[in-house]
Length: 140
Image 1 (cartoon, helix red, strand yellow):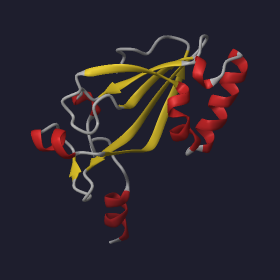
Image 2 (cartoon, one colour):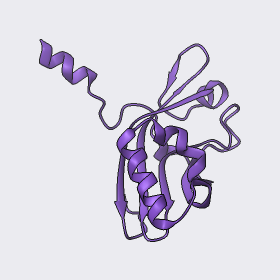
Image 3 (cartoon, rainbow, N blue to C red):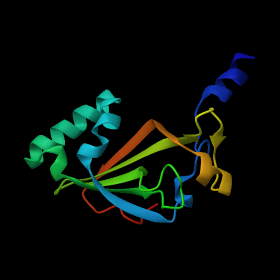
Image 4 (tube, rainbow, N blue to C red):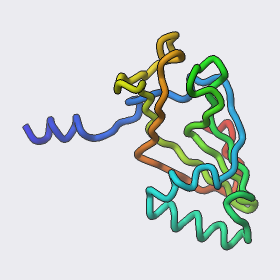
């Protein structure tokens, strides 16, 4: 019985909103995602170490993220995972489980007219990241 419950509680890929459905990308700075990074102590330490090595501040590191188009009434222009950030000598790729909800808690996991009209909240959890010396764009 406990094993069955554990399976239900473990986040798996495919739960939540699939950001690969978004048809746009958009740039931002690492500084724009530091609040998210700060929630994961190991990632925070790694990012701070890499910033020190590169001699950069978070606002000097350019990242790309998936972007909600203007068709999304409340979320147009917002960026979500995956993020790819260029530190100079290294690249950081961050993936997260993304959840979209309206103000009443209804969850949207697909792009629909209703989701584009009503989704107002984005949460990103369960961060996973990799570092590489090569540009990871387009390498899924």
